Amino acid sequence: MSDRSSVDLSGLVKAYDVRGTVPDQLNEDLARLFGAAFVEVTGADAIVIGHDMRPSSPALARAFAEGAAGRGADVTEIGLCSTDGLYFASGKLGRPGAMFTASHNPAQYNGIKMCRAGAAPVGEATGLREIRELVEHWSAGEPLPISPGRPGSITPRNMLQEYAAHLLGLVDLTAIRPLKIVVDAGNGMGGLTTPAVFRDLPVDLVPMYFELDGTFPHHEANPLEPKNIADLQHKVRETGADMGLAFDGDADRCFVVDERGEPISPSAITALIATRLLADRPGSAVIHNLITSRAVPDAVREHGGTPVRTRVGHSFIKAEMARTHAVFGGEHSAHYYFRDFWFADTGMLAALHLIAALGGDQVPLSALVAEYERYAASGEINSVVTDQAGAIAAVREAFAGRNSVIADELDGLTISTADWWFNLRPSNTEPLLRLNVEATEADTVARLRDEVLAIVRA
Image (tube, rainbow, N blue to C red; front, side):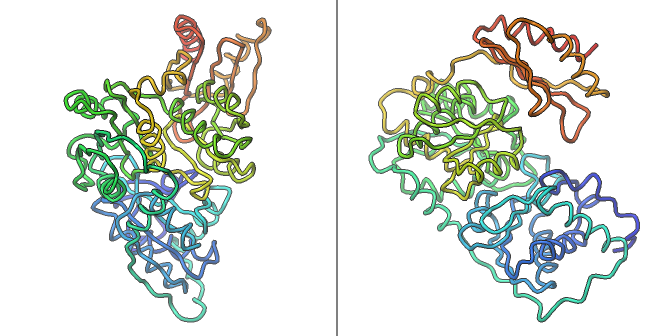
């Protein structure tokens, strides 16, 4: 490196992954060090690496591979893949893995999602802190320790068809009726995975933006933002499709619109998939984070399962999935986790379950999910707040002592009664407080929203 003492990783290494702008925050020299540190911390003698379609991804992934091989690990490069494709390879091969992607972030960003063998997450408490410390030492000029034995090999392997076959083997799609489905890949990795998975299904596929292009020429590959699914909604209505699917940039999240082009909440999708899986595995645990709708634990109990409530964040979900041997888990952000997929998240498997449910019934999708849209909700509302702890304390005090109110602090502050709840939690990375409100009546949602925001923004 030209100036090793100037390397600052504070903005690059997050709680769950590595993510920053290229080349000022992340470059090939650093990627090479991350590869060496990853092998050092995991103790792996073999790893697997994949990457998305961003212009910087192939070179960064190759540098990581060189760093890992330099530490003696044999590297399998699976090339272009979705993040759940990398998790599949990690699980199938029994090796730690690294995925080069910045998910839904703009084109100038890139990053690394890392996992241990079997797709077990690597986060701040499970190895990422140690990896960062090693990279900081080495980037500041400290020599890498002498590599034991021979350098590792670097071998390419295309696993796309194995990935597709594995997912299709987890869902019975043999008797579904023909469906027309619009898929917006957002120029992301869904443009590669969708044709492979849908190829032999009785689906009239209407593709949108399947060309792999990490500059995202049509819209950001972030379907959580309503403006980014507007094209999908229009196309569903225009073509008379049965549903629309939108994947984010690395295609690990899946968003859904019904036959009217109306968005379906990830909570309703979570409840629907949970009931399908509980039919085969009654009594199983289902994980949901604390800002998913109450419709999720309601449905899980009604179908003989055990709902387990967790903090927001994939590391918490995955830890609870493993601890409880849960059959399924879902988040408000459209991450869906499956016991049959090494407890990892895969938007494509969620999409297949939805296709199986719709294709096995004669009703439209809006009717199929109607029973899981039981409550009014605010959606997530962000407020810039410098003194987050002080604002949360003020809200806690304002609601303390009110009749039948229960407070808990599993993740931020949750205040609840039999008819409503709200959660106010700080962002992990920004000076923001995030508010979610749900109630049996829409006017209650509006009243609580306005009352809490008035305190927070005072």
